Amino acid sequence: MNKNEMGRKRAAALKYETGYEAPIVTAAGMGYIADKIIEEAEKSDVPVVYNKELSSLLTNVDIGSCIPEELYEAVAEIIAYIMNVDNRLDRK
Image (cartoon, rainbow, N blue to C red; front, side, top):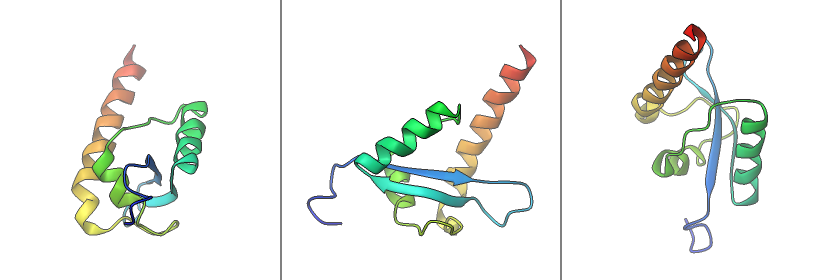
């Protein structure tokens, strides 16, 4: 990572469906692109989770690729959290 990339906002979008080998990176970027990824997610009511370290790692994964195994646990925790929140909202 060069000096210009340090400290810039990063964002990644993931897609996961039952039967997939692992979540897939569908979008990733820094700065303006990161802002647009977050903006589109919010407009579409897609949950946004802020995790600087994880987004930094995910922006290094090629778009269309599965996340690497070393990120499975962190991403699984986020997916479980989102599913739990969704289930609670559905019960209201």
